[in-house]
Length: 442
Image (tube, rainbow, N blue to C red):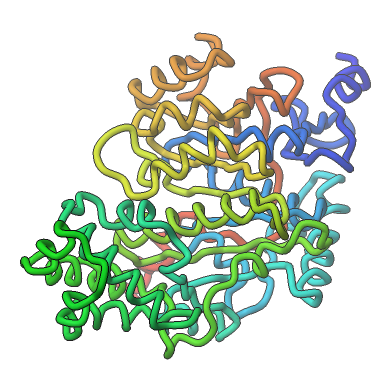
C-alpha cells in the first residue's frame, strides 16, 4: 500500500481543518493516515453524530469542539444535558485528559499540549471555557464559583417565543400574558425583574383590568380564570428552570458579550450546564438561548461572532413527533443559520426519533456503532451518503470508530477517533471498582 498516496489524498490544511483521527487499519506509527474535516463546511452546513450509548459520540464531539476553539479560535456553545462537557472545567480550572501521556499518535503528542496552552491563554483574555448554569448551589460547588448564573431576560423575547415555552397556551391566556407584558415593559426599565411580571398576574391583576386601550377580548380574558392559570404556568417555568433574571440574580445574561462581537479575536467554549433539570426546563433554556443567538448573529448592528451550537440528546430537543418547545428554533437554524454564520451539531443515540427536517440539513454525518434496525433504516433514508454496505457495517464498529460521510470530507471513511486534550465526563464508571467485591472477605 502506498502510504504517501493515502496521506496526500486525505490531507487537508491544518489552518482550515481539524484532525479528527486516523484511517482505520492505518492508525499507528509511521504508517498512520490522518483524516481531516474541513471546518468551513462542518461548522456552517451542520453535523449529525449518531450512535448507540457507549459508542463514543460525545467524546468524538469533544475532540471536535476543543479543536475548533483551542486551535482555530472559534465560538462554540454546548447544551450539556448531563454535565459531561462541564467536567473539563471542574473546580473552575481546565481539567486535562490523563490519557494524553499514553497516546501513540505523533500528531496528538504535539497538538494536545498546544490546545491546552491556547485555551489557558484565551482564558486570560476573557474567552476559553465559559460555563453558564442555573441559579443553584450545586453548580457553584461544581465549578468553585467560576460559573456564571443564567439570568435570561424574558422581555428580550417575542410573544411567539413565549408561546413556545408555554406550549398549548389557550388564546385567552395568551391575551392575559400579552397585556401583563405590555404593562411590565411600560412601568419597568430594562433589565426587568420577572417577579414583577408574576405580581401583575396575581396580586396586581386589578391594575391590568383598569388599563386603557384594552380590547373587548382582552377585558373578557382578564375577567376570567385565565390570568391565574397563566400566572401558575409561568411561575412553574421560572421556578423549575432557575434561569431567569430577577433583581436578586445579579447581572442579566448578556449573550452578545458571552459570544463575542464579530471582529473580536478571542475564542470561547460556552458550556450551558443543564444537568438535573426537567426536560421542559432544558427545552425552554435551549429554545430561548438558541433563538437569541440566531437573532444576535443576524443583527444589522454589532452582530456576534459566527457560532457553532451543540445539541446533546438531540432527539429530546428536535424530536420527530409529539410536542417540543425547542424543535421549531432548531429547524429554523437548520434552514437559515448558515446565512448568518450559525451552525450546529445534533447528537443522538436514537436517530429514528430525530426530526427528519433537521437531519436532512446536516451535510456531515458521523455514524458510530448502531444496532437498532429502526435507527439504521432512518440513517439510510435520511441521507444518500451511505451505501447499504456502510449501514451493514455499523453494528460491528468498535468504540471510538466512526464512519464519516459528507461535504467536509473527500470520501466516506472509517476513522478511529483520536485522543481528547480535556477530561470528559461521558465515560462509563468502573462498577467493580466502586463495588469493591474483594472487601467481602477483607
